[in-house]
Image 1: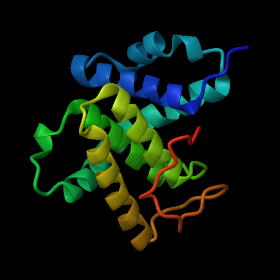
Image 2 (image 1 turned 90 degrees about the vertical axis):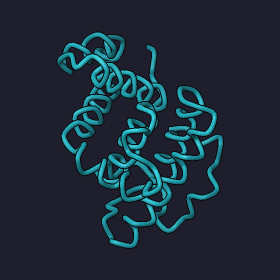
Image 3 (image 1 turned 45 degrees about the horizontal axis):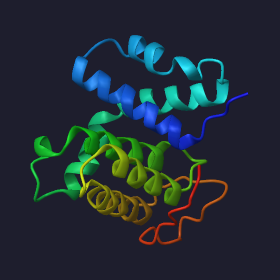
Image 4 (image 1 turned 180 degrees about the vertical axis):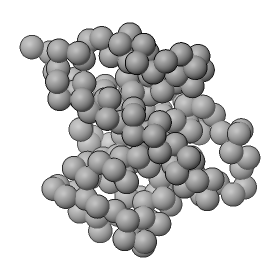
Length: 162
């Protein structure tokens, strides 16, 4: 039985969101096509779909967080992949209680290194760290399980696997 690491699932989520953003095709068709190898893996498929739909549902809210942290940038000029990774990361911070913030941020950074520009991982790290700090300060983080909210996210463990 093949199991998928969450990083692989996040990469597939990124692919779905990118395809949807570019093509404007119905999300269900894109999910059926890109997530075909996850369909028989209930947990993985459910996680991917939850993240996809939550990012789409809350896109305006997520974009407001991004815009508030990139005041010296025109939002429209942020690379599509970076924007999608930031949305996914902020979405996980806000709505996925069982995922430690450190893991969310580290995963976004590592995926950026694979799929985006040379400077994207630092940009994404900076924005997600700033949003994370804001959410902590505003007491909007609702995390349970492993991963302490009080831990610093500025020093990421490169070997974090989720």
